[in-house]
Image 1 (cartoon, rainbow, N blue to C red):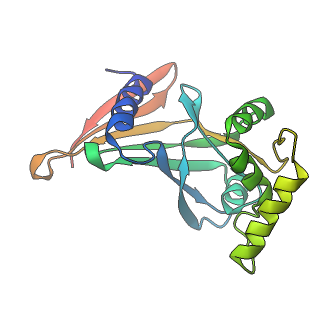
Image 2: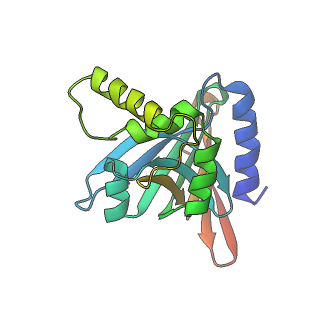
Image 3: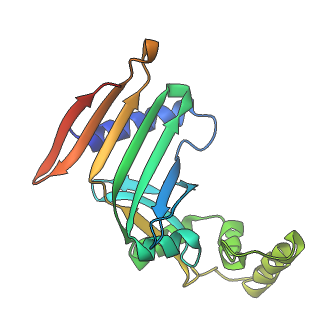
Length: 191
């Protein structure tokens, strides 16, 4: 198989049947303007040849990192399959239409939570957060919850994709795809 997106689709389908929780969970690594790295877990919400998409509050730390340094690395670790996929590339914002469509597909409570959250900023107590959530619930009672203007998607467009497979005796296998003019170059690496 020489198309990394076909291989990702195959591995992701297997992960969805074998991983007990969140097979779409991925580590997102960013760096701020000074090059200080940060990593956190996010959920993959779309993927294809144009990139890998996640959604978040655009006023939090990861958004600030991406504004200053629009590049990221992703890591999927599917422990039950003994596999990992690493992805590196530039990051762009998803369109408003994409963000609106995904936001509309979320549960109402998740929509309200997006409005109530000041992501990456401290609050004095959990009760304050719950009160904000209740306030948003009252604010939007009886009507659709619109997407907050500070919330939306990001797309990581891969320049490199590495598929790592655990093997006996630590003789692991790594298939590395690198974007080249008109397609992908593939290399097979061993530890």
